[in-house]
Length: 73
Image 1 (cartoon, rainbow, N blue to C red):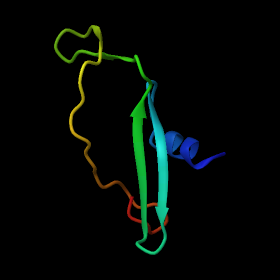
Image 2 (tube, rainbow, N blue to C red):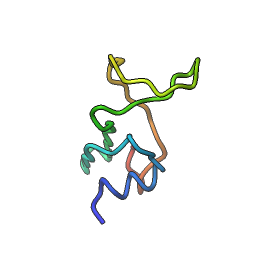
Image 3 (cartoon, rainbow, N blue to C red):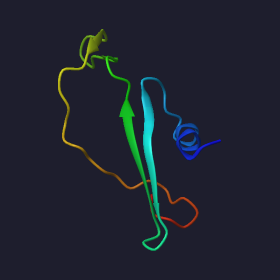
Image 4 (cartoon, one colour):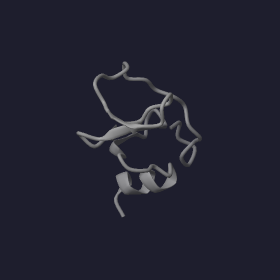
């Protein structure tokens, strides 16, 4: 199993979300996991509950997750 698939399973990602990249910096003790979505995907509107196409993006964000074997994730 590759590292992208491993993190998809651990994070319990559902379609259309997927792991685009996993970067490990052993010196810094850090694992960076980058998420993305399949092009052309639809997302459920929080107001009307209908499936809607995506038309823009928020700025890229980062958040701290639980450690991966003593590495900040």
